[in-house]
Image (cartoon, rainbow, N blue to C red):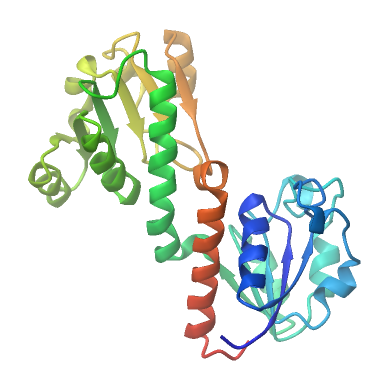
Length: 291
């Protein structure tokens, strides 16, 4: 692998481990915004000009921004305005982060900087489904008043996370029910030995569940569906904003409910950082190694 300078600016523990892994690959890495990470080498922020000078690849957080147009830097005492970074990004570089707003892409394009939103990368999403599923199992083990073996759990959505979580739960001896919209997914659910549920018929099946895990980022578990569920049914939402559970109705009905975002970064930041590293290398290869 050709040696390049990487500037890793902001983000959570995933980016801390990313920086360490890049260094192990003999890449030149400078970091900014990790002074609260607990890592001795990250205690002091070098000047931003120094961090960005000569960088070919700039990596931000997932997401790139926090509130009020500051860079997302949850592991730093400092606040870094986005404008300050955009002004100092070198020309003809590759800028990689998560959930990059369109105006940032347009602004950097004026400097011939190519932006890649890493959240849109399929390999990242597929590999992140594993720590997400493991994190979900950890939560279920903690929250359910019974063993997973012999429990009945409904997974809503049979995408990347739904597929991997179903298989893992089956290994624990769970009676897995999985809801999907497409007929092809319903067929796959049945072929894998799970109980299939057409998503428009959710209300017919929720009454017997010990837990419901949602993976669909749209309102699918409505007030009407919750009315049919048992009061002691645990609700777990893994979907990105806006989520898929009517949280207000769930609260009014007295359900125990959790909405967990960004599980890979919370439960397995080293693995998640490695997935980001591999995805970045894929992007560089696709770009012909010109950065």
